[in-house]
Length: 270
Image (tube, rainbow, N blue to C red; front, top):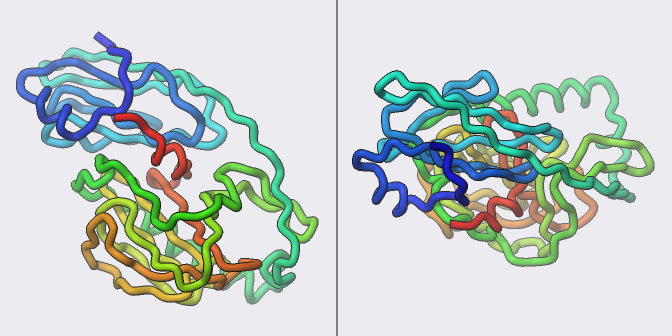
């Protein structure tokens, strides 16, 4: 039976764990969503070429990309060998164009040596996103890392100094430089570098099962790789380092290499 449901809270999942053979996923989600589903414990779950981790109480998580087309198909093999495919409709979104002026020219059209530095740095960040830790911090209700005006939205097409760039990979929140940045959910610090060319002070926080947050343009970093942080703990301070025209926090989220929308994660229902 495929049930129509919203996102499951950890407590509900625990309550259902014993002897529950239901497969529960949302009927539909938006592009850029983080999806938490419920399957029988010890099931095998496959989606988008990956075998997903399943918690001891049967929760799984996956990400729906900005440009994903539906339906998303999740193959579930129960412990008894029976198979079922859950299908999730994907609602398309409009992606407006954001024009960003006053960006340092070398960050828009970098010379070869700088382009190679950017490539190396981004490869390091991408490697940190490949982790698949057996922690369910992603199941927490996420909180805002800072409170302020949203100055840039996930998915919008960016134009820097009149030159088209890639789609915006996260959410920008405009707040003063030095504002403390707090962990939106618990996790493990997997990357911290104060001087990346494009993103400046950069921290990655892994929430388990491939879900991670990244915080860019920081003026100060208060954590190191390997640190365990709890929700609400200060991990750094807002700045304008890297490719930035003013102080703000860029908060991005990913499921492995799939970018997801932090605002949808904040708005998800229990």
